Length: 443
Ligand SMILES: Cc1cc2nc3c(=O)[nH]c(=O)nc-3n(C[C@H](O)[C@H](O)[C@H](O)COP(=O)(O)OP(=O)(O)OC[C@H]3O[C@@H](n4cnc5c(N)ncnc54)[C@H](O)[C@@H]3O)c2cc1C
Image 1: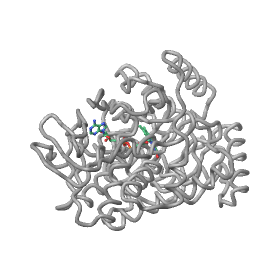
Image 2: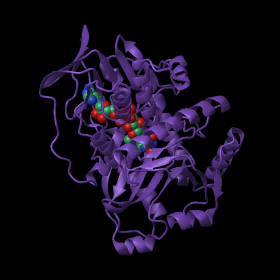
Image 3: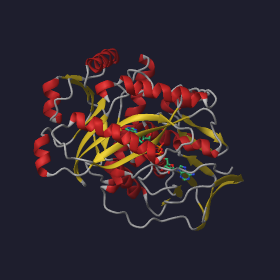
């Protein structure tokens, strides 16, 4: 199959800009063979590589990515590894009790797996930290959503703590939030530091990662042969860890929603500004309303900064224009200015977007799509965790390691068919804009 589209990531991958310039990339140049080929070095691809490198000691694993490490969506996200249900398409994040219990088990397994890599590869607390998470409410509607979520947590027998205005002010330094719902199981990552750190830990004489080496053709002649512009890898088994780009390889056509979400990061704050802001040195909040803003205060490599994420757009072309980016950048600035009136002179240094892949029925694509070709795709917007899970389980499927989590994945439905274009885009974008307009101060 010829690969119909290659990834195009809008704007800079800001988290990666905070880190030292990486050494020059190793690109695939020539012909080689491997026991395993993994396409994609995001959360799914790296988790699959880790699983295989432990399960199949001695096997040679080659990873090909179209971009540099941490330049794609894996290095562009807000960094919340969420253990609890977080269905972005629902008004309240949650589903039914049984489904949510299974989801929590699976998510925790994935976060534990990530934590184990962090320990094995000696990553710092800035790269990964098990901080828990807060759903912050800026309106009475947000408080009600948090109360409903808390009731659901009672039913699930999951611990939580409700934070009042004072607790939110002490944490954030802001008067903006009326309350918060803290749950302890989540982790937070500096996405680029995590991805680059894990990749460095994986690299060995058995695991090779080629960057800037997009696969433009994948065919089977006995073994699988992946062709890049300047080389070829032959392997009997392949794990496709390209999230929504599985469509570009010819699979799941008409069943996956390509959605972009966007973020902006301020310049580094001065020491005066840090004092004026107050609050804790680092914190992060998710919005009580899924259509609201995720906000992080970071402090570390790259200085003290604020990161704001909001808005979703549905883009089946898997590309967005610069004009869209600057228009949404203005929304980010408004969200920032409303929350941080004490920082009137602080501008955004970076604004960017990134791809998510969702299915209408919130299922993933983890299965053998052809002989020896395994998919670890469609992370439904929570790829730090569900991508990690997909990579682990695709590797388990390929090596014959059973588990209840793998059974659940294999028993789940295929992604539901989307309405035909232009109906799908029209309907989805109207719904997303309507959701954003109703988010009010949560945005
Ligand atoms: C602004 C923003 C905020 C977000 N916040 C969060 C959050 O807080 N928590 C969370 O869990 N998720 C978040 N996400 C989503 C998360 O980043 C994605 O779900 C996750 O990156 C998906 O992981 P993945 O490994 O499946 O795919 P990706 O990270 O997309 O990795 C796939 C890789 O495949 C490569 N690829 C594609 N085609 C080819 C090809 N032909 N040849 C070679 N390589 C190819 C790509 O270059 C890419 O590196 C956010 C996303 C954005 C954009």
